[in-house]
Image 1 (tube, rainbow over the protein chains, first blue to last red):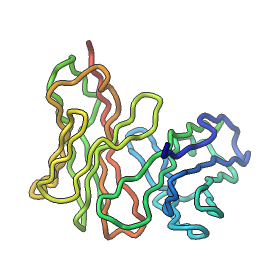
Image 2: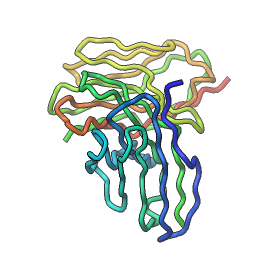
Image 3: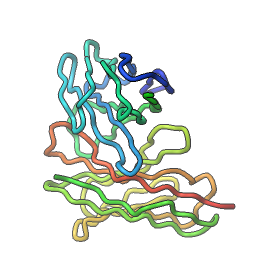
Length: 115
Length: 114
């Protein structure tokens, strides 16, 4: 089954304790990205990756890092989490060709609470 | 920059009622338009999409027509069910944006009562 998986699904942590949210896709997509969802703001892109070892900032990258060492994985790293990073996080992937209207596939989400 | 505006929620309807959720957009290019749905406790699923003016996307009884002249992509369903209760997001992608990102509206929560 084609899917994007994320782990963990739920995470409670404390300010300053480094954490990583993993994302994996089995569709051989070159493009992957991370979004955060906040009430009243919809989803906003954090980082994206066009291919292995190619990453770039989205609209809200402050406080986050990513890496792309393999095509299927795109982990999101919070080096020193703060309460304003409490949010619902989604990983997404899409086929590589820039076809018009190409669908992005989303993971199930990771709900993070930073105390 | 590009943006999407959705009607505020929640929208509360009785089963079998007619649904409209308004969505308007601003874009510098010629975007593709999408509706995504988020059921309680789940991730986002693509509901329907349209890639050019006057296209009508449809799925599961939902429809939306790409109206370039009014920059709108309103979601409609003739008869809603309790199982349609979810949060609906309108989104666009601009083909000129090399980040391929989706720009989302703030979401509209739909509650359907039996």
